[in-house]
Length: 400
Image (tube, rainbow, N blue to C red; front, side, top):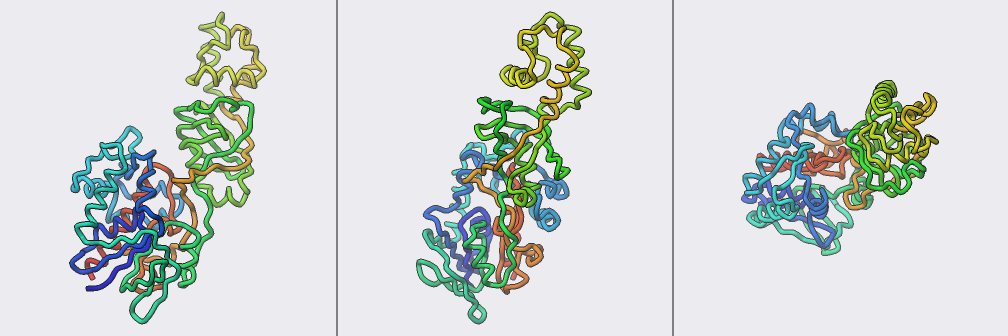
């Protein structure tokens, strides 16, 4: 019976172990932390955003700033529908929410963790926690993995460590090229009177753009204590991760809070003015935003809140619309989600065979998960890449 050593007890490592043929292999998972599946546990606020209900691989790859070309063939063989079926076959009921994110019915990530733990228990997979890998040596046909708990020998290595710099150094020392790591999903730090003391205010649909990079995104937007967040910001941070790192996170972002062109906004305003001339502007619900935000817009537009709508001048209206539809903010840094941290960068994709996720440089060596230079926007996509890659590795080994 041959030995498989899986380095990294996260989503990719566990899903791979759960799909391997235990009659053919003795499987050992090495995890440096005291607990396995830590990112699964905290994902989606502890509910675990398992995947995303997008069942067309060509559509699915559009959510991956890095790795989209390579993942097309991977998703053609194992996509979100397969993930859902895998868990449902193991008595985990899943639900698709309004935004197409998929969660367990239980609203608890523990359900997902338990399903995988049960699967590897049935396969007698040995899990070693607090086991820190120091180096990997190729000895003849086999590999020797040197760890804090002694040496482990394997015929096959599956490398699913996540993107820690230490794990990238180990794989680099074996001959792989590493693309520099940069944060990929982060919120923008902005100090601006318009946002002051409005943390928690959200917008159902906003548009964000970074003029210097000629890039734009849209989606829900959230004001935070530090600045701006929400999908409209996170998406743009993911697609422009490398460029924003080069700009040292100092740049201008333009925000359209109401997703309407200035001309359309002016038309709405004029109609409101005609039908509600006597209302005070401060108490007027001209656009679909909170009263507090509307009043702040009026303040920064130097408009008297007690003025009647009929008396709002063209100049004042233009200033208000400018602040609503074309507000420019200076970004002075970023805040990352420490726990659900996603990075761009990792093992160069040119060195991976995406038919089975094997290394083109090291024989009998497979790589999956965040250690690769693949990342996605939020919504269950990063996990889906892990599940699909891990499944391909298991199929390849099961068919040897």
